[in-house]
Image (cartoon, rainbow over all chains, first blue to last red):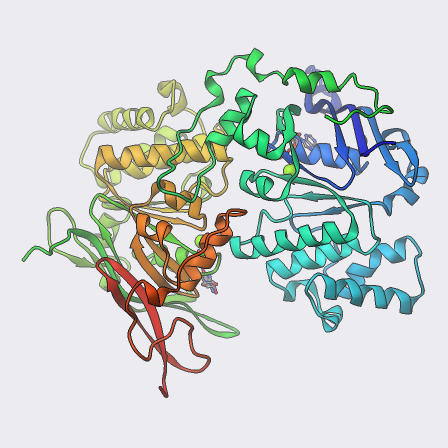
Length: 307
Length: 320
Ligand SMILES: Nc1ncnc2c1ncn2[C@@H]1O[C@H](COP(=O)(O)OP(=O)(O)O)[C@@H](O)[C@H]1O
Ligand SMILES: Nc1ncnc2c1ncn2[C@@H]1O[C@H](COP(=O)(O)OP(=O)(O)O)[C@@H](O)[C@H]1O
Ligand SMILES: [Mg+2]
Ligand SMILES: [Mg+2]
C-alpha cells in the first residue's frame, strides 16, 4: 500500500527560443523551464512549491496537470487503486481523470468569459463532465457557494462585482465542485491583502480537511508556505534544490540556496533585522540539488518510499 | 522658534477627492503626520486605503478627476523658509524645484520613471542638469558615482545601455540612483519592492537604509507589507479607508499595537504565530465618548495622543 498520490520522475519542460524555431539561421537556445524534477507527494498533504519568479513553479504544476505537455518524464498519479502515468496519456484518456485534478489560480477569472454569471462559472466543470441534471447542478452550486462563505443569491451576479477575496472564494468553489482528490493552487493568495489572505488560507485549511484534499501549493511567499504546507520543495532555475518537512526546512535549511531565500524574509519584528545573503557568492557546485533530492530520482515509484 | 522635534515634512488634515460618474470618492479624508528629519516613516495599509494618493499629493502629482480639497503640506527645507506645497501653483518654478530636486519619488514599477528610448546616462544626467548647476561632463561623473553607490558594476558600460537591458531589480537601483543624485531632502518610495523577488527586495531595502544614513535623507516609505515596515521604518502610520488610524514608533507598533485594526493587520502578517494583546483600555487612557469604529451616519474623528508620540484615531457620532 502506498501513501503517495503523486510520484513525479525526471519531469522536464524545455522551451526553444529564438533562431531555428522562427526559421532563422541562428542556433536556437533551449530554456530548461523545468529540468529533471523528481518528487513524491503524500496523499492528504499540502506540498509547497517555493522559489523566485521564473524558477519553474508554474511550469511544474502545469506539466503535472497536463495543462502543458512535458518534454520528458513521468507523473504517476495514484487514484481509486489505479496508477497512471499522466505524462503518457492521450487527451481522451486524460479527460475522465481531469475530474480528480483541479487548479486554483491567482486571478480565477482571467481566462473566463466575463459575461458568465458566478453560477455559470462554478457549474461549468459539472457541465463539461456531464454530471447531474440542471436542478442537481444548481443544488451543488448553492451548497459549495455557502461552504466557501458566499450566498446562494450571488449565483446570478457577475464576478467583477466582487472583491478580491470573494473572487478567490468563487475560484475555490469552481475548483472543488467536482470533488477532486488533487488540487493545485498557483499563487492563489498572492494578490490578496493580508487580512483577506489570512481568511482564505484558513478556508483552504478547513476545506482540505473536510474534502480530504491533497494540495500542491505554489507560491513565492515564504511565510504563506510555512503557514499552510506540510512539506516543501525549494526550486531554483527549474530544479528542486531541497525538499522536506516545512518546519525542518525553515528552521534548519541544508541547501545554500534555501539559506539565501530564508535570509531575505522580512519578519514583522523590528528586533529581527534581516541580514540578506546573496546567490552571487555561491559556486555552481553549491547550486546543485542536495544529494537526498538527487537520490530520490532513482527511487522506484511503485515501491514509493516516503522521503 | 525651532520646534522641539525637527520635522522635514508636516502634513495637516490633507483631503483628496476624486469626482467620477458615480459621485465623489473621498480617497484621503483628513490625514496628518510628521516626517522627522533623517528618519524613515512608513505609511502602511491595505490596497485602496489611500497611501498612493497621499504620497502623490505631496509632490502635487494628483491629476483630474482628483483634487486636493483641503489641508496643508508643510515642507521645511534645511535652509530656507517653510513652504506649503498644497498652496503652490501647479506650474510654479518653486514646485518644479521641489519635485525631483528637494523631494523625489520612486514607484513600484521602475519604468514609471524611466524612458524606454533613452540611455541610462541621458536620463540621469537630464535629472541632474535640471536641478543642479553643473556642466554636462560633471553631470556624467555624478551619474557614474551614483550608480556605483547603488551597487551597479561596470558603470561606464551600463551608462550607455537602455532600461530593457537591466533586470527588474537593477532597474529599481537605477531609479533609486536617479532619485537620489540631486541629494533630495525627502525620498518618497511608493511600494518600491512590491514587484520584486524577496531576495532582490532584501537588497533594495538594505540599499535604501544604507543610503538614507549616508546621505541623511528623510524617507516616506509606502508599503502594504508589515514585514517590510519592521525592516525599514523608525515611525509608522497605519492607514485605512483614507484616514490614519494609528501613528507611533515602529518599536511600539510591533510590540504593543493599540488600534484594533493595527492588531488585525499584525495578526494577519504574523501568520501562524498567535499574537494576543491585552484590551487597549488597560494600557492607555481613552477619551470618554469616543470609539474606534466609524459610526454609520455622519461622524467626526480626531487623533488623540494617548501616550507621548503615540496617536490614535477615534470617532464620535454627530448626534452623540
Ligand atoms: N510558454 C513559454 N515559452 C517560453 N518560455 C516560457 C514559457 N513559459 C514559461 N517560460 C519560462 O520558463 C521559466 C519558468 O517559468 P514559470 O514556471 O512561469 O516560473 P514561476 O512560476 O516559478 O515564476 C521562465 O524563465 C519563463 O520565462
Ligand atoms: N484616478 C482615480 N480615479 C478615481 N478614484 C481614484 C483614483 N485614484 C485613486 N482613487 C481612489 O482613491 C482610493 C485610494 O487609492 P490609492 O491611494 O491608490 O490606494 P493605495 O495606494 O493605498 O492602494 C482608491 O480606493 C480609489 O477609490
Ligand atoms: Mg508562476
Ligand atoms: Mg498604492
